[in-house]
Image (cartoon, rainbow, N blue to C red; front, top):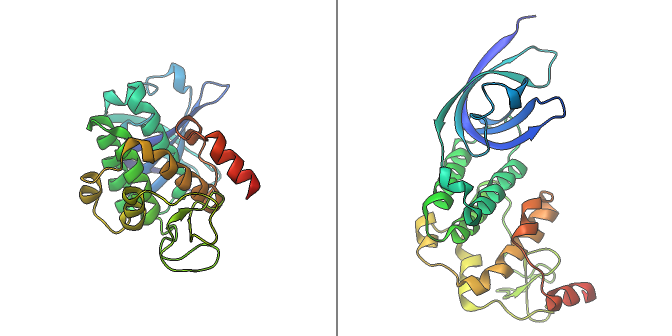
Length: 249
């Protein structure tokens, strides 16, 4: 049976160093998500090129009996050094883990690649990286076809709910809710973020004080629908009031 070599250009969204020193990397490419191993990675010439968030061109070699291809060559095509800044790195890491959870290996989505690449550029360059990450997280969710229900109450189906769902991350009507209604800016964002363009969303930022509730809603929804995204632990804080309400619910 013949071996095969494949050339791909993509962004490193996950990087795991094994005890042997080999590096397993996951790339999001226009042809889908690709996972491969760089042998002797941390000591070899490929290590610095296969850093998280780097846009690289790689050649992988894979035999039919192996689950992982081996990275034979890697060329750095682009880097965003400002993502190393603490106030930006956490949001970039969240976006990478989020994309890894949403899109399956081998699944074709050129639009997903372009949207993710734009998200990283925005986090790297914009003065409000949190808002970029929040908008692009919801846009990636919409692209994956997993959209929170905002037109009807998640419990009873009543129209035009305005309250957070503390368990499912969707929205509840006043009769079903135990939490106060979202403020007008947050409510408008949740109802329109997926259908609006990125630019329209970016031009209407929600006040920073209202964003933790939006992050919590997104975290709960994604956890139930897709699985846990651990990076949220650094970004989403639970107030004592919120924890108590959730316990009662």
